[in-house]
Amino acid sequence: MDTTFSAREAAALFGRSYSWLDQRLRAGDFKRRDGTTIEPLRTPGNYRRFDVPILKDIAFCCYRNGWLRGYDKLRMVLFNVATAAVQSQPEF
Image (tube, rainbow, N blue to C red):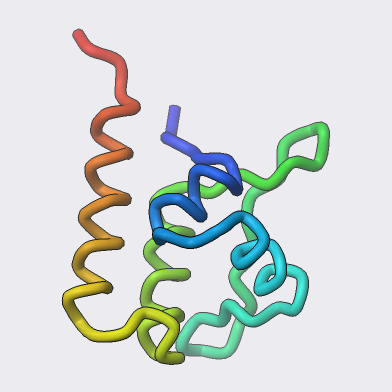
């Protein structure tokens, strides 16, 4: 099973508030390079869930739009995502 994160967890990985993420998702501000809108996964209860590829797409979008100031901030977010994904895996 793939690791997914709630909207609050996803916002925390970016060092941002839930409302920051929510407002940009509702406005359709997160776009891939090809112009398609980045949409989170949805649970049966219609809650947003974010997997690692979606979080990476959002991180690169933020970098392209200047919402992550500098390459070091992008690297920090990607590190946070990777670390959280590994930590959420069950131990064998």
